Picture (cartoon, rainbow, N blue to C red):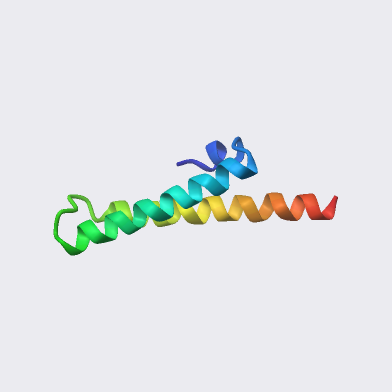
Length: 67
């Protein structure tokens, strides 16, 4: 997921997407433990997507607080 795509989303959509990715990362970890995960790098990519979303959420919230 690109930052440009994230910035085009609304604040509520970003929070929903972050929650969805948190559930996905849990499922990926469970599959990794049981050796059913084909691409373990998917976990890293998902964590980075979550970080990007949280960063943009923080930026938008700061912008609304400052005026």
